[in-house]
Image (cartoon, rainbow, N blue to C red; front, top):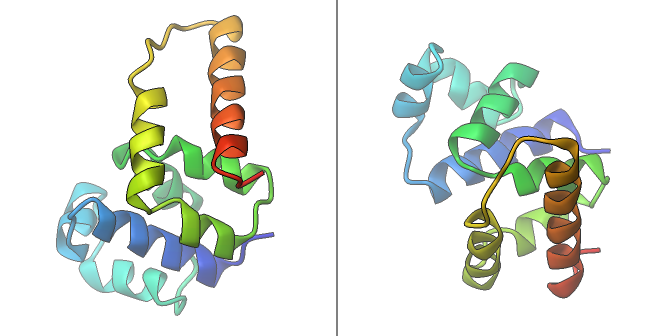
Length: 121
């Protein structure tokens, strides 16, 4: 299970990878910049709301899937921010997304196949 400190590091990595400053992230989600800093450093608990908002804002639903599948934090950090990963992930994200259980299951299957292809699962 991923720890609060690891979630803070993950939020920081997603933020930096997307070119956001702590101040921009804080402003976007109505936090004080010092609170974001403390959460990223593991000095303060990360709210579930912030994690979900970051995943949505940065388009990293893949991270949510990996966390839910209990993929080790080190694997997520070492694999999910490489150029190769981003390129392959962008292919999946460009697929048409329709509302419906069948489409959700199809997209989840495509993500899982993708994770297997790059040897995360």
